[in-house]
Amino acid sequence: MNCWKKQAKQKNTGYQTKNKHGNTSTMYRAHDLLLLLFNLTQLHSQNIIIQLFTEEVSKLFKPASFTFSYELDLQSKIHHELKTHDSVFGYILIGDAEHLSDENKTLIQHAVQMLAVILERLANEQNLEKEKKSLEGIAETRNRDLELTIEELKKARYASLNLIEDLTEEIEKRTRSEKKLMESEERFRLVMENSLDAILITIPDGTILNANKSACRMFQMTEEELCRAGRKGIVNPDDPNLTKLLKERKKKRFVSGELTFIRKDGTLFYGDMSSSVFRDSQGKQRTSLIIRDITERKQVEEKLKNSDRIFEHSVDMMAVAGFDGYLKVINPAWERVLGWTTKEMLTDPWISFVHPDDKDETQSIKEQIVDGRKAYRFENRYRCKNGDYKWLSWNAFPYPEENVMFSVARDVTENKLAGEELYRLKNSLEIEVEQKTRELRKHIAELERFQQATIDREFRIKELRDEIKNLKNKTLNSAQ
Image (cartoon, rainbow, N blue to C red; front, side, top):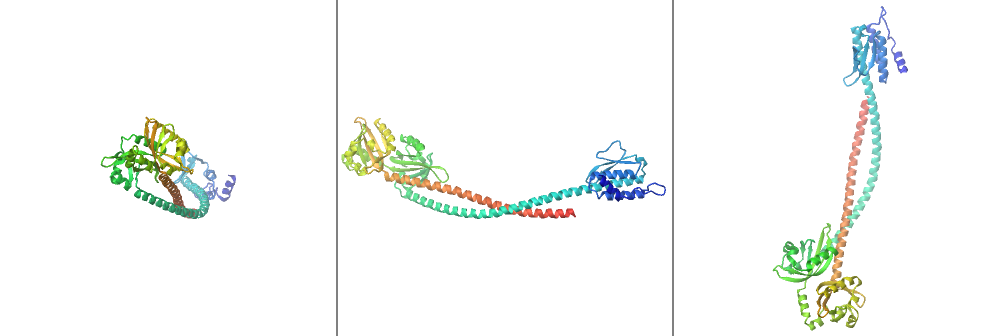
């Protein structure tokens, strides 16, 4: 502070100029005040400026004394507020003011106002300097951010090219998958249209969604009528197998058996049906239902009970089996289907010819028949003489009084394998297409996000450039 004060005193020569009577005149005081205020404009500390002002003015206007206060002293009769239009800095308090003339009081008032202007200018300069440094810091930071952003955009550009190549490859894969699906759907359509069996696509609650031509002929309804009728309109609700088969399908997702169905005219007929549960491409649960009219077969089975000739020449495998687990009588169809001679089949227990995985369920069916209940459309695998296995579909009727059962079996291996292959192929293609669709959607979403981010960054770069330009212009204008 002493350094600043010494500097101010060196510049303010002539503070105590006196007239011929030895008193400092108003004119000389005005000159000294202006010189003091000019020198104060060269300083850069508010506290030093105020201190030098009060000290020098006190000397200039003795015996009056001048002090500075941030708050107004209520005991001070004379004071001047250090303020401008926008700022207030405090108060200049005057002691022993009764010795001051009106002209001196006016000079002091003007000097205080000029001091307030000097302080405001100093404050503005300091604020401007701070703002300049802040803007320079912001500009520097944003320049660094801009450089980093440009570098990221370069990297993103290369990443975008790689992503586009990956996306192109995924699109080609999806195109191939869609082609396979279309081919699969075409095969499915051909099967639906040309199958001799009725095929229905349904919902587990019994709603019918689609029906082929054979189903329309079988039930004497149009496809629209079948869809309106649903399960309740085509299945005999009094059939005891209905509840059992529905429970089994819900548990195993596949079931087969016999049911009685209803035609449009109200007549009942026997149907050999198989049903499986699957999910479509949207993940919704669906069921397929394949029905074959076995009315004629049922009639033949009735005739077989009393016809030895039909027994011998039947294309189906027929047998009389004892409750002791051995076959008693079989027709020639057994050897034609399985390759075993009649002697070989009658020598060993029939359960020994059953596939190991099917023995438990087969034994359970046998116990059901021994208890006096019929078994319809029961399927299991029998071992052939060459070591292969064939799927057989059985119908069995008990004769408790003779301790035997009468059984009729049909070789359904080709139908079984074809149905399983069709079901496997359809599910496999649906899963593959669904997986590829999810992956493609993910890649498309990533590309869209990247493109949007690139656009946003380009706009942001332009905004940053404009903002830096404005900041530079503002800094230059402020410095001027």
